[in-house]
Image 1 (tube, one colour):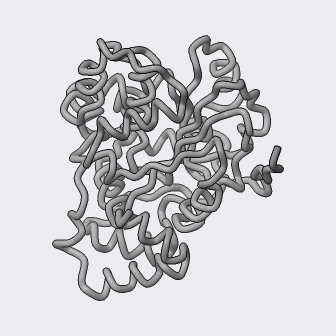
Image 2: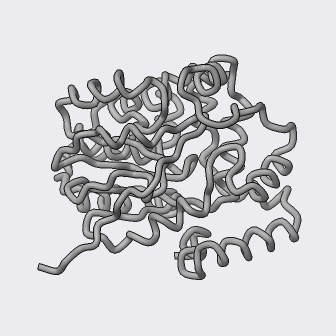
Image 3: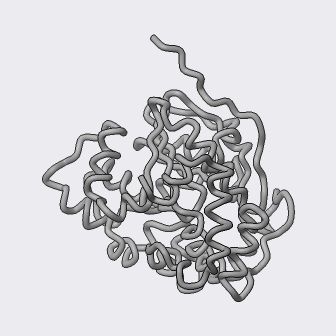
Length: 298
């Protein structure tokens, strides 16, 4: 058998949202599924897909409750870890960590979803601009925050993009290292890379590809239900089951969290200089192959 160099955790990542130390005490099972993204890249959509595959197209599946963001620092580890241990179904869990801040299990299966950084920013701006008082209480005022608090966003999405680009992921967490770390392990036998654009272009094909990778037999008599329940319209209408805390941290609730699901809105507002700078930086940070993949070029 060929030797595999499995990733090793080398650091912790802690901020207003995340605390990577929780993974240090997490007890993996052989069939765990870990769904990773930078953020706003199709995480909730992929969680919905995996939940629908595992539960044969069940109606109103409480995906957010069943598939929590493990490294979100609320609730604290002493609450979250027992809850995860108590789950009886095949676990499908969410992370926004880069690989080197994540405890990596050769026994688990990992799905990583990529999306053009400019689309990520446009999606997160809506998410951030509609955050309510409860949102800021959770991430800024709950015990254990490391580093500065998260401030309200500027009025302009272009200004938001500029801050994110110039300060590498501000006010979230570094972008390039996240993508680069997952791209580097794409050939491991228990890792599959997905792209937001591919899910939009051929959701049925991508769902079947995910099912094959996760070794989940598809109940063909439930196939149409699975497709319906993974559609954007269904998820928006049933958002309280799909999004964290039922959407309570956002003005307008879950339907604000599941906003438009479209790409390319930045074309109308970013200048040619913005676009050239982003594309140049992407190649410098990721290399041509990964930068092309992230931009949706295959």
